[in-house]
Structures are given as C-alpha cells and as structure tokens.
Length: 83
Image (cartoon, rainbow, N blue to C red; front, side):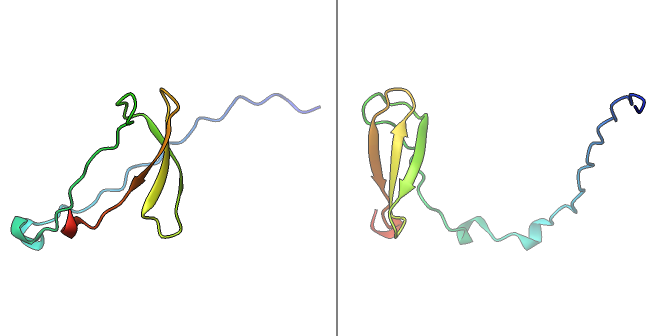
C-alpha cells in the first residue's frame, strides 16, 4: 500500500483588481432611470422571510410562501409608469 499523504493547503484565489471608474463616464443623476422598490412582506404576519417558488409565463405574477407562517400568496408586477 502507498504511504499516507498530508492534506494539501487550499489555495485562495486572488481578487481581481479593477480600474476605478472616472466620474465623467457616469451619467448625471437626472439621467438615471428610477424604479420604485417595494419590499415584499407576508400579508398575514408581515415577515420579509419569503420564498419565491414560481411565476406565470409572462413573469408578471410571482408565487411566494412565507417561511414563518407558511401562507401562500402571489404578487403582481405593475408598469412603473402607471403606478
């Protein structure tokens, strides 16, 4: 039989260094597109610990389950222009 070998040391990947972006390349704040973000909460207990387990074919309806009270419900995505 062969001899027992000690475990190898794990090598860590070195982080890639990215060049800093100059401010002149970024658009002005007035040019940014803003979309309202409303965090999902369980309608029963108000928890934010939700699991998304499905969606409709057009992806406008999503199905969720609360991880606290186990309520199943759906959310509907609206066009932000009409909100």
